[in-house]
Image (cartoon, rainbow, N blue to C red; front, side):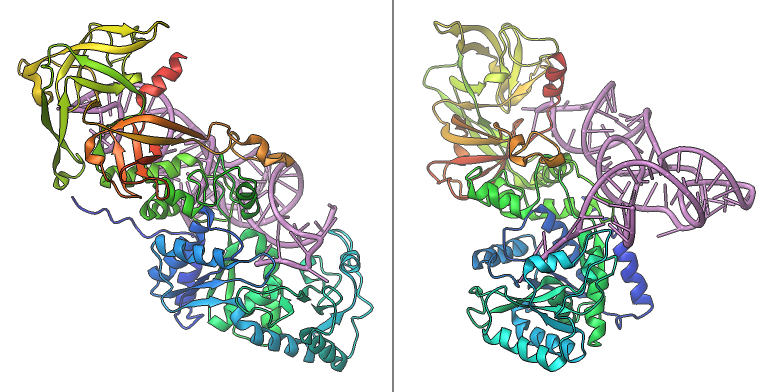
Amino acid sequence: MCATVSPPPTDFIREIIRRDLETNKFGGRVHTRFPPEPNGYLHIGHAKSICLNFGLAAEFQGKCNLRFDDTNPTKEDIEYVESIMEDVHWLGFDWEDRLFYASDYFEQLYQFAVQLIRAGKAYVDDLSADEIREHRGTLTEPGKESRYRCRSIEENLGLFEGMRAGKFEDGSRVLRAKIDMTSPNLNMRDPVIYRIRRATHHRTGDDWCIYPMYDFAHGFSDSIEGITHSICTLEFEDHRPLYDWFLEQVDAYHPQQIEFARLSLGYTILSKRKLLQLVQEGVVSGWNDPRMPTISGLRRRGYTPEAIRNFCETIGVAKRDSIVDMTLLEYAIREDLNRRAPRVMGVLRPLKVVIENYPDGQAEELDAINNPENPASGTRKVPFSKVLYIEQEDFREVPPPKYYRLSPGKEVRLRYAYFVKCTGVVKNENGEVVEVRCTYDPTTRGGDAPDGRKVKATIHWVSAEHSIPAKVRLYDRLFTKPNPGEGGADFKESLNPNSLEVLTGCRVEPTLQGAAAGCRFQFERMGYFCTDSVDSKPDALVFNRTVQLRDTWAKIAAQQG
RNA sequence: UCGGGGGUCGUCCAACGGUAGGACAGCGGCCUUUGGAGCCGCUGAUCCAGGUUCGAAUCCUGGCCCCCGAGCCA
């Protein structure tokens, strides 16, 4: 087997970087950064950005920093910074010794602001928030200058110092850039750069009562760290002139901001605000609920970092808005797990089978292949006996067209065991089949018939007596609409009521006894499952279904109605 | 309406004036001790209208449609 080396991705950002390298724009350096605000858990959309930024650095022999954009203490929390670090590492990226916080720069940022004031490019405004909004104008009308706009440099300096010293009430004054109240770009209409906010910061505590705004802090943070390419999402395109303006005013080192389209995934939401709402309202069990599109949710669901990285490479990077189909993500995890997940047999909805001609009390061990995709993974022994369980859906008393599985008079193969033929059924008082009777052909041990006889189907099974119980959770998409909340609707109205189904009477082969948390398996013919990292115990197994296997029969059955 | 972006198979991404290509999905076949995996094939797109050009997805003009922007959020 040879590893397929995929060609390096090409996209408009890599083209820009290659050009910058050719022209020696940044002295041949490539230095990016991933700048999350610690106000929520990372999701698959962040993974796209992480893979881009760290990937670029790796590709061009550069560096990528992890920087927390923590300029708003009222929304941020240490819990989030910890989860973010864990998730970035888990995804397989390393910021080495370059862990930074915008809050590390508060003093420098303050000095930049003083510099701006000294240059007559910033002023303290006493207008209220409402007044500032009114003065801003609208998308089509210019704004009006504040009556405090022409304060002297000395007065501004004194006032700003007073803001820092805590002499003024929260919200009573702000520091604003002096740019152009008539600019068609509202971001340039004297944006606020510092606000007074007495809140305890998760890192700086109560050292500060003024905090810089994003636009001011971000560019200077990039500049301080020597970032070359500051990659962000499309909604910041309008902010680029301001990003550039700040750096130009003080003649600071000037990184290049580049914008790309954020990821949207069908049938889910990638908004930290909305995700937080699901968590707070208990719609899901937490940020790491396996139905969540968060990194921690996907991890608990059984996704691998490799699959997520491959997914991110597959979807590419561009500037047009798009909604990526969930099947792309599912393909990525199947492709990875097919290669590496050991196969086992597990029956989710058991139906009892009695082999009439198999001796009572006898048992034998049959060889089963651990992973047909990887011969090196070897074989294992699976116990077989007279009473088995098979999947309810693998038996139909009245088989529909093209149904290959077990039904009265029909013969199938029990995986790695024997051919069995159905001789009848036992029903309960409601007329439901509660037991299937079969005979087996002792000459087909292992699954091959010496007479060359073929069967259409091979089904999985477990020995009733030897199997162990398990709980299994089946997950489905969180929402019933491709774009929840589209058109102003409440996104929670399209929550999928069937996104979680818990199966309790499952039976799995004894190999699984004692499985640790977070182990991934393929339950043959059923899908990929992993032991839940919080609820599964070695003696009380709980599996999460990561993703189903492709199911041709399900398609046929669906077409048949 | 003002400013900034963007429109290529059902979906995502390529094609950088020279045969519109790949992946996923779908459909059909081969193979198979997983109706899995794999392999082969098919279907299928340049927003519209003009123009430039031997030749346009690409350049020009004019439309149309979509997204973002009026936080002391990021």
